[in-house]
Amino acid sequence: MGIALLFCFSTVASFSPFMNDEAASRCPAQPSMITSSNLSLRGGDDGSVLKANAGNDASNAISRRPRPHVDSRGCVHHALEDAMGGGEPRGDDEPGPALIMVNYKLNRDMLRRLWARTTVKICADGALNRLYNAFDEEEERQKYIPDYVRGDLDSVEDSVRDYYKDKNTKIVKYINQDTTDLEKCLELLESLETPFSQVIVLGAFGGRIDHEFSHYAVLYKYPQTDIVLVSHKRAAFLLRPGTHQIHTSLLGHNCGLIPLGEPVANVQTQGLKWDLQGQAMSMTGLLSTSNRIRQPVVDVTCSGPLLWVCDIS
Image (cartoon, rainbow, N blue to C red):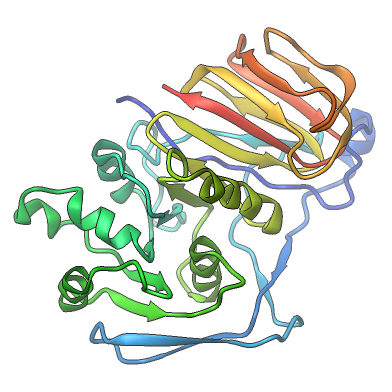
């Protein structure tokens, strides 16, 4: 499966999505910030269960990791690069993506390819069972030991938890019914010193529909964090207000643009079979579903946050 899944995407501060090229060229990308709870981990380095304490200090802002390429026009480039081993190797000082596995069937081939190219691996609660069961042979299973598992741990089988604990996976128990396991993992990731370029969420589609919607919601809750949701044949990420270029050589033919979070007053595209020419989009009005990719690069300009969904080849 010759695909790559390093999605680069960002936003440009103080950038009007419909400014002309001259104005956009005067608007350099700004390093964005994300606020986080004051997270601390307590426990040993021997794989023992850690307890996470989350405070409410909204002033504790964490500087985000390296940003993707933004050209002189202020256009954000969504590049599918070498996370699956198909592109140029990264330099030693270039951070790769972080991998979060959620509780749905993990495609073994995709898991293998992503594992070697990601800097930190985190299982969301019951995904630890999925990871364990993804392999039939113990010799192969031992090659895929995550750095952390986080959640309330109500879904993790005791034998599986003990197996990974013995392999020095840090077991971080955190009970908070107001956040999903994926959100808990994102909070943990932001508290670590490990640099990362973006977050790949594996196993995001195909399970319960309420879980899938909670994954979409995370894109809107964490707009300054570069997150791509993937499964074996699907991908989704958020286009923030602005101008975007989506490089499509590693995508399938089908795609859609969904104004899931809020109505979007103006959407323009170039490179799709059915391009949008400044129409408004909303969940009770126009949606772009069953659209088709026609060009190596698709341009999208949107006045509000817009969900991009697509096949991956």
